[in-house]
Length: 272
Image (cartoon, rainbow, N blue to C red; front, side, top):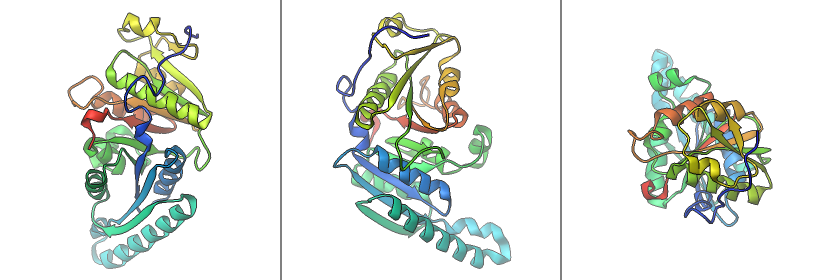
């Protein structure tokens, strides 16, 4: 079911397009990080900066017991290989290689460089396992002070076929929609704004002129997840306050329920 007319563009909400101007990509010893790099290269704004931050997390090799030294060397070699492959796929402005904890270094570099977007590869786990055992994706969601791309296989280095964005009356939703429309215009992608009628929908959301909107009888989270498919990119806004409705739990449900990459858009006031 389609709603009437068109919605906000990247010029209607400050920061809608600036998310893609300064990108950091976390590279580890997994192919998922290469996928994140390829997709970040597509999303980077023309003239924008992209840096590859590779971290050999040798501390994880301690779980190998007596084989820890050999396992640590294997992590180091695999991380170097993934960084080399990422550099072949993406025209990066900078690349660095270090040891330690990937998300810690990403967050430090984000603050130092004034990054507006961090990209990491998703791990093949569900939300409960992610929250229990951790992982770069969930750690980045919790710790980053800027927008975060969680990259899944499906597209990159080609563009996504569709950009899906969850829409309600919140400021973070408006920012996400502005970023989605700005990106869709630049890449020439179809945009699908999703309105979940199962929530308490603000009448202003329904009255807004969006020729391309998809009205779904389910909650917004379930509607966005249902609209996702591997060739898509989902955008969802996040509030800076964890206690806010879109501060954490609902965003995590989208990230771990979607079948495609998810870009969690952080309001500019909370960045840096």
